[in-house]
Image 1 (cartoon, rainbow, N blue to C red):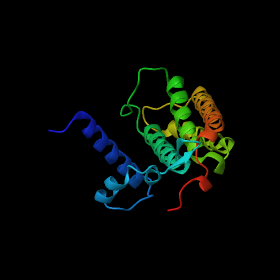
Image 2 (image 1 turned 45 degrees about the vertical axis):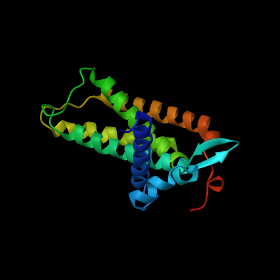
Image 3 (image 1 turned 60 degrees about the vertical axis):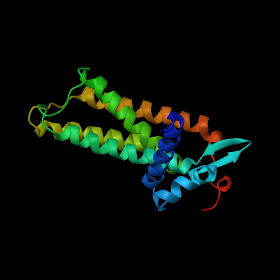
Image 4 (image 1 turned 180 degrees about the horizontal axis):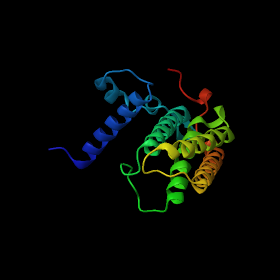
Length: 182
């Protein structure tokens, strides 16, 4: 019978292997992954001043994927008839702020320096305006200017917060030259 700590270490190894495969940074078979994971460099970690530092590229790729999935979710939820859309019970503008806050935050953090948060906010703002216009023609949906304002506000706050977090954490992440070459 295995102890709880052995199972937790094995589970962590499997999670890290799945994460690496999701990020497309490894194509090794599962057996070789589990044997190589005790090495921090095998997990995309670099040692900097005695501390393990996470490879920022993998984290950004993860947030890019989540942000893009959030945009797809916004499209689906915005264009289904109102009777088929799930409701949280919160007022409509609060739902808009939350949805666009998260989407802008994920996209801004994921794309980091390669895309300006202002461009992401501009894209989401134009997108929310287009959604409100299209909703005029969808059964059981309505178009409100306040929804557009709430969506744009949520995008601004989410992108700004992601930008602040990026700047605050930039020294904690490994630079490309600090990482082992693979």
